Length: 408
Image 1 (cartoon, rainbow, N blue to C red):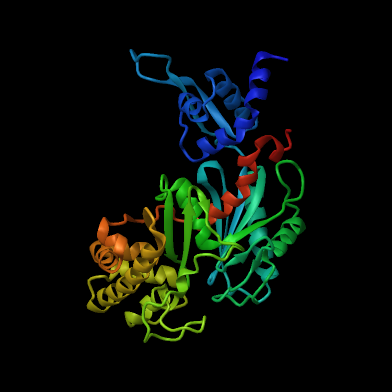
Image 2 (cartoon, one colour):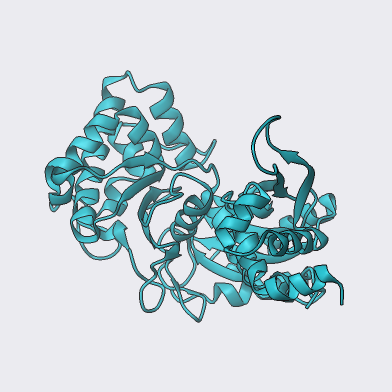
């Protein structure tokens, strides 16, 4: 047995943690990897070499260090540019989007699909998977797994969509099962040659996970994410790097916080919930605009706030949504005491349009807001839910690269 292999056997348990460090950008060099793993330089080198042999990372032979610097300069670590990908998909009220996502959360290729989402989930999932299969054919990339983001709470471990309120699916639709069947029918197999088992999760939960690993949530210990996509409002909490999904995957249904007791009836049976007071449809209606067929509700709302914010009706609508959103965030701050809040979708646009107003509402209405303030930041990933869906597919590789890639 070679000395390198001996070091690798000692460090095999570090392969997953090492890959996760490179994946999240926390180990840009072999020296940092050595420190973060708490292993010897030789073991870190063997681990990095094995990850490179698996086609996951690249070790740059040109050391990173300036001339005259003390100590041995370290080698750079980077994601392999032609490495494997995860097939990620998102279904929303206006259709779907499929993508290939590599390590590091990088979107390699993407394909949107506009359609009225039918009541049978299998129909749209077949279309999603076919779009993903075409991307795989075009790029010739290996696929490590597949993840799906849906606008519904997803029960664990069954993988059923319990309350898809803004699409026509029946409650309890077995979306993970349908997704896995569609993958098999399309002939998509994993990097190890075996049929793929699809993963599924709530779209905002997955966006929060992606932001925590690759975006505005990096470094937060108690991260609260609130976002509105094409319809409705969702929320998620990441605690110490893990999604808090509750006992059955149903935690953080923040869209059903009441922020206007005299408001219109909500799908849940209450009135004036955040879900219908602070989403794109609410913004368009409050601004006196009728939604059109030319683009998604989210895009129409974004275009309106970006292009016509100076109009009194648009500014007034934005201020009303900011106040409603601020009330909801204040209640969540009192309950959860997060160390950071990130906002996505239209909420990101509202924050950027009038950050002081939103932060003032949260501070005035929350105990912890008044005592020191909670940072409120915009999400930075354009397709956070897709990247988060890919994270579900990448997780087995991050846990055990050798086993997941059939190299054990």
